[in-house]
Amino acid sequence: MAYLSPSQLQKFQEDGFLVLEGFWSADECVAMQRRIGEIVAEMDVPFHCRTEFSTQEEEQLRAQGSTDYFLSSGDKIRFFFEKGVFDEKGNFLVPPEKSINKIGHALHAHDPVFRCVTHSPKVQQPHLGGEVSPHQDASFLYTEPLGRVLGVWIALEDATLENGCLWFIPGSHTGGVSRRMVRAPAGSAPGTSFLGTEPARDNSLFVPTPVRRGALVLIHGEVVHKSEQNFSDCSRQAYTFHLMEAAGTVWSPDNWLQPTAELPFPPLYT
View 1 (cartoon, rainbow, N blue to C red):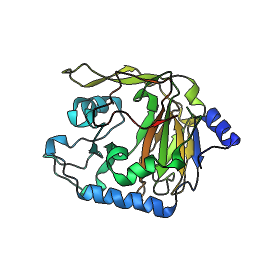
View 2 (view 1 turned 45 degrees about the vertical axis):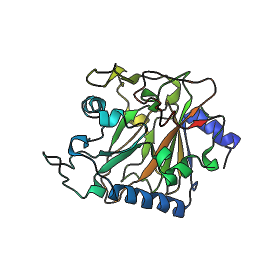
View 3 (view 1 turned 30 degrees about the vertical axis):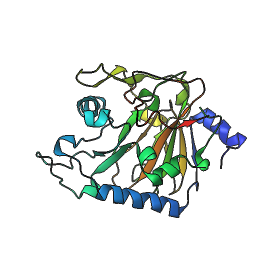
């Protein structure tokens, strides 16, 4: 499916997100899950690099924002962990395969399985501009003009109300960006800071978006979304990446993620 129908495009433009059920087959999802299992089995993260991933602002600045392991991960495959999975010495309290919150940020560049998924003709979409707290992706991936970043979220397993499906505020992509995470000058500590603040959100505005394995969710860079903590016995694995429209777009020079010689830029679409 290289193009959206007029009705699908209209819904995306109105809501700021769109669910495409059955986009990937069960076999394709299993292949991605199997590859993640292989990558995690080979994981070797030094004790001083064992970083808990968080979307809470103070924890972000203290953990991700102050560590080179995170700030230099844009062109590498690195591992970020759930809260409470280490003892005071950095040893695992749970099986390592159960400890992962996120693997980032260059699976799409360095792993052949995920490179094929990311650059598949199926995901070329023209004409589209633990708990994850409410946020906008453009807070971290800022462009000028706005509206040029598209999130692609692939459900490798069913995402339900019980195991932490996505929630959106429909139409919230039209109100601009409330805060930005920016990289501090070289040598500064912490390595990032926030400009602006995330406003309090009315929980009644959020709409749950449960999907089946194989669904693809398109996420406008400015739509407000979140996911709740997984209280079930079922995992909820997903693969996500972002596309940026190439023509006429400026990637902010103070974004935390910057091009490198090894990886000149995130995936682009035209």
